[in-house]
Image (cartoon, rainbow, N blue to C red; front, top):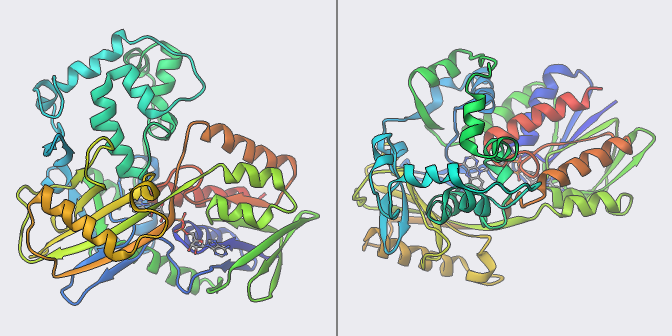
Length: 464
Ligand SMILES: Cc1cc2nc3c(=O)[nH]c(=O)nc-3n(C[C@H](O)[C@H](O)[C@H](O)COP(=O)(O)OP(=O)(O)OC[C@H]3O[C@@H](n4cnc5c(N)ncnc54)[C@H](O)[C@@H]3O)c2cc1C
């Protein structure tokens, strides 16, 4: 009997890839758009410059990072990678814009002991605040409140708030501490402070990570992040080719309208009037989109899925003549308390060998509607981006080329309570014996590594 994958973004393509390795039954992938890849889209202009619409860098570290590198190796893409080494300014110099200026964040052991603006005292003194901070026993809390409580307000304002804007375009005052600092939060809850937790876990033996050649190279060469010479879409294009060669039935321009579960199987109805009966569904589409497909039969599940909200991001890619960046770096983030309307700027030309200055401005996120209204024009966003770039980076010339896109509902927000909502969703699916596995950015991590591993787990879950 057939297994159906809903959605052909990175997680749907990864699910198809992993499933084709273990399953020899019919596999169908249904994608609403006329292309595969979802938010991953790399456009190369006539000058050889890549405008990334969505993600642009991948982290090589940890089990999830190693899993992605293994996948890349299996797809024979190792020679297409462009690593950014930890020693490179494009990795080291990460900046925040605060009090009208750009500040490089501490990036060495030595810099932790110096007063470095925008902080009013050395970072290590803020971090030491953890030793005397009072414990608060809670199930979950916002990452802003947690870091403010344990380390002080400047860490919450200048480090964590901009970081959360950079990772998920979200508001640190609403995002769960477990999104980024689950371990540290659990140390506090279990041992009374993060320092005590770290000390108690120093001697706990950890399983050594198994690394294949590419992951070993990443470690030896000390990659901080990496991208691909021809953009991140290299990965989704290679997955598409691979799954096509494995006879997976791919249908583009097919919007799934409805799912009904019946006697351990499911019926999927699509916009083109077709229906598919299958033994298992792997859904890689957003939680809200899935909710609308099963709300009639399973309203309780739909309510839980609908709790996983998303934000809209404006992405403005810009190319300026020559090198116009004073200091090379990864880019800068803007804390929500500052006046510029932008979330941050990525210095793409520091990651690729371009003669011109290439930047991506991220806009809106949690604040999109408040700042830009319901339906802003591309021109409106472009003008705001250019004005902020002019003020902050002092780039006065007009761009040679630009692209503006509004990515509606593109990043899920793991707000306080997200983890317990996920448990309820899992329990509902198990208790009702629904032949359904979930993957994608709505559930266990919003980054590239997270969604690939979520696809692998969903596939394992679909093989009873
Ligand atoms: C602006 C931006 C920047 C990012 N930067 C980074 C970065 O630098 N590094 C990083 O690691 N991560 C980054 N991410 C996150 C990363 O892009 C995502 O984790 C990843 O692309 C999500 O893939 P997905 O397959 O889960 O979802 P999607 O890409 O959303 O794919 C879901 C697919 O399902 C389809 N679909 C939806 N509903 C239906 C339906 N009813 N029927 C059929 N098909 C349907 C959609 O058309 C889509 O193709 C960024 C994300 C954004 C938006």
